[in-house]
Image (cartoon, rainbow, N blue to C red):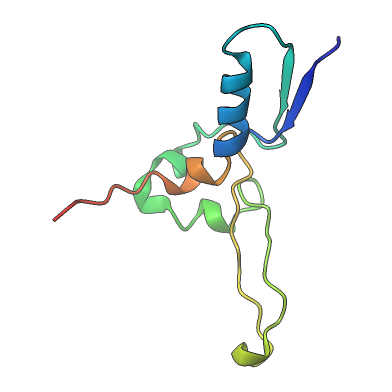
Length: 98
């Protein structure tokens, strides 16, 4: 198989790019995603937001470098490891406009 474009990651940016490049059906495109489906109950359930953010199956486990201003502590930096990337995990929250 040969591809004109290989897109790594099917998060918001990767999916949008693949869609736009594929609109004219001129270029063969491959989208690679390491993570699994975002159809998992813990990802689809808004009340379970904090669970996938702390699970190796759904999160890359990134953290910041230790910061002096935080007494040498690091902060967790959750990033989605599923189809749709972090958007799949965090856009389940519905904010009500007031």
